[in-house]
Image (cartoon, rainbow, N blue to C red):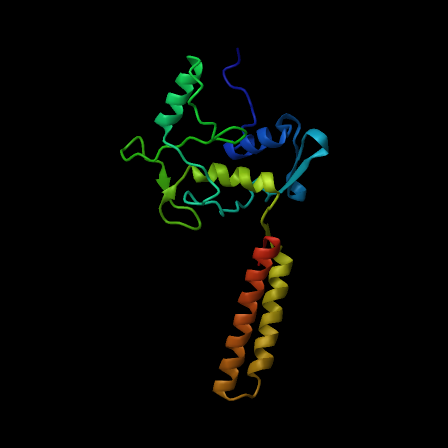
Length: 201
């Protein structure tokens, strides 16, 4: 046997999404020069993941551990139900997880048990949440697209010109008010673009 083999290993969230959507990870089209990974699945389903030159993509972190869409249960309860199922004692078992993707993570405290840390939205949360957020991003197809360098440069030039126009030969108060209004309009546009289209300015 070879001492070392080259193998592609996918993020667990991608594997979960592939299982849910029946995506073929073995035949993924990886085109980093054009910034995309294309995954094909059953019934013509396709997911085009926008990536950077290193193969990374932005995660939509909308599902926090306290999100009401997530079903939570202690792992000991799940293991007990599995044991009862194997023994044929299924009459009193609940079926809360049928047809659902299940992710098991540790929230216990201790040196080797804690799986907590920071995400872009929270400074201390369960890091296992990255897996369900990656899976959710791919399943829903709600990918975050960042503005290109050209768009960012045009925005800088445009905002600079608008600021110069608003402050040209105006009194300090009027110039400041105009600049603040321009700033608020840009922030509102950025929020709208992200919320509606997942487009990051």
